[in-house]
Amino acid sequence: NAGVTQTPKFRVLKTGQSMTLLCAQDMNHEYMYWYRQDPGMGLRLIHYSVGEGTTAKGEVPDGYNVSRLKKQNFLLGLESAAPSQTSVYFCASTKGPNTGELFFGEGSRLTVL
Amino acid sequence: GENVEQHPSTLSVQEGDSAVIKCTYSDSASNYFPWYKQELGKRPQLIIDIRSNVGEKKDQRIAVTLNKTAKHFSLHITETQPEDSAVYFCAASKEGSNYKLTFGKGTLLTVNP
Image 1: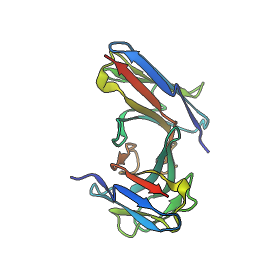
Image 2: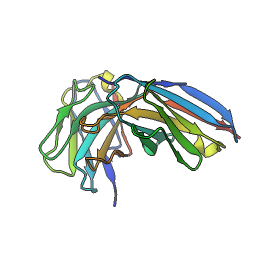
Image 3: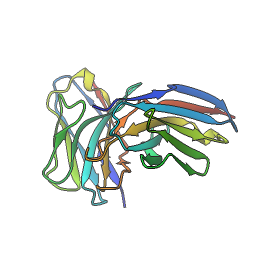
């Protein structure tokens, strides 16, 4: 099993450009999450999904959109990138009720110039 | 919402010494407290977790203690080794929150040979 896979791993954008980060998991997990990691800030939840076709806002959702059209995929979109969105983005998944462990992807480093 | 405070932000110990990282949480309804280890450039990985019906849990050289009354929990690493050097994150969540974890800001542990 590949676990949780994120693409791309690195991307440089100019302010105002758009892009999509793809997260794929092959563990049949129901719950999926997008976090951003900034120095000294820990991991902050952007959006999450509790199942195919569902999405919900996390702690820092502004400037991002998400979609979960297929159970195994969770997409994070930036419609108009801003320098404040320069960060490392982590996708994570978990099986669901009574199981707490999050399985993280390798991360995607995004730089917005 | 939940707020998790983590201390210290950096910790340097000599190989063989013990290391303790402390976290406090604000939401008394939180009942699940995991610890994640993130090596440089890698993804966070779960190392140990504890639920609110347990006061202490051990796994070889690592242990976690929970004080529900004081709303704090701690990670204890004994006989530290250089490979323990990493950033450690505590987190908290509560039943019914869709496993949304609120993370502390992290502790950079350096184990000096």
